[in-house]
Length: 160
Ligand code: PNS
Image 1 (tube, rainbow, N blue to C red):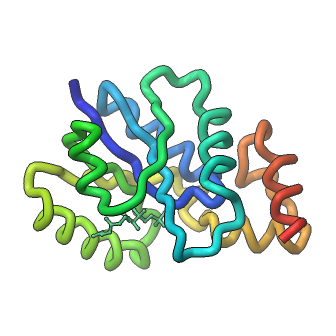
Image 2 (cartoon, rainbow, N blue to C red):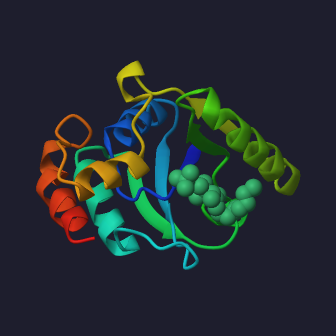
């Protein structure tokens, strides 16, 4: 069984993530979308809320499992018996961080392969950080979020 982990903060999830999930699930039998539980970073949405939104977004996708993790990604991937880590690269600016992380993860767990996927061009400038900022100041998020999550994210971000 080919299992991949798609790890991230997903704070909040957006259409660029969904695009990656759709691409990733074609490659494997199971894709675990794993929300990092990072107590050092102040998040807009709790881990439980982020997982709920991911579950809502992927409810018709049988290969997707939504989970959370803390600690090292490689330890979590081993626990889930995954062979692959999936990460998205939107632009050249993502490359340096992703390259460092992939090489470090390879050092820690040589049996794990990192697979980079590119989202559709129209999502190449979309990030959770920008979604948070636009939402906070009342901007239009229609093209960045799935319809089913729009109200929830907008309400959550307005309160920040
Ligand atoms: O969505 P993000 O914030 O870019 O995701 C970053 C993430 C969660 C993939 C990364 O921070 C991570 O894997 N953290 C877990 C801790 C870890 O394994 N750190 C060493 C990476 S080399």
